[in-house]
Image 1: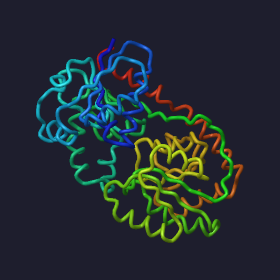
Image 2 (image 1 turned 135 degrees about the horizontal axis):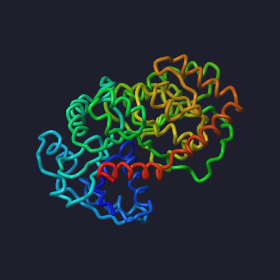
Image 3 (image 1 turned 120 degrees about the vertical axis):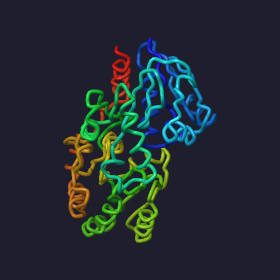
Image 4 (image 1 turned 180 degrees about the vertical axis):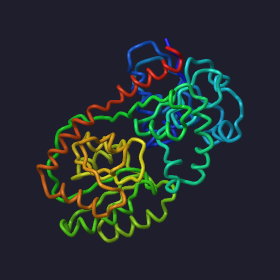
Length: 370
């Protein structure tokens, strides 16, 4: 039996990204066979914590351990003020602690930390300056303190090894999973050419280049529409203004902060999906699109090449013509769309949260010397 303290704070305070990772991973861990015990550690409020617990499947023993401070104050205390208060003094003893969001708190016991990307280091110009400063200071300390460093892709593992060579021997790449739909069958062609992109509205997602590609697409397909779905994130004012301008011109539809049911409707109604990011750690929406039978155009960067393999078309993120050309090739050919839809479904089925959980549990065993 292993007693695991699992940092569930992202699961209750973040909807997408790390929040989805923490929720899906925790649920999958609870469904693995065995007698592991889980301390669900959260700095969230009582209502959010209760909602998380009620949504978890029956499975392994679990018990909530609520931290006395909110997420902001917890970060201030441990990561900025560097208060040397060990986490076990607040949640009780455990065999291994899993920091799911880039950092781990002080502890005398084994720790695992998940690194989702190094965009704060590799592409800081696209990130919130305060977050860049915070992660630039906090991540190296957590890497040094952790017994095992989990990365969400081999691409991120390589970036971490290059940036922080002393942690190379502690790295374990554990890809994210994807929630598969009930009927992963190839899609029928849509009446109106509909291009979908999903993700937080922020500079790293490169939406401006995608918007500029749409007039080229519409020269061949005048009724083509770009649907942009996501919450408004950091440094987004200019991007939102550009989206609103394109929306007024009839080029774009902006669906802000869609819930899961709305997202499923968007996936079902799209012709293809496009993800032109400058930098990613894994690219979960790429797999979500593939799992739903959507052909995908992805940015030609290492992490998305790793995730999509030969099941996506790739375009240089800064090349408007390249992105537009890849979109038009799919719109031109129903057989090509069908081929990539089938490839994508097969690719997505290789990435399950159960496998992510199994490999993460192995990381816990490595951290504890098992």
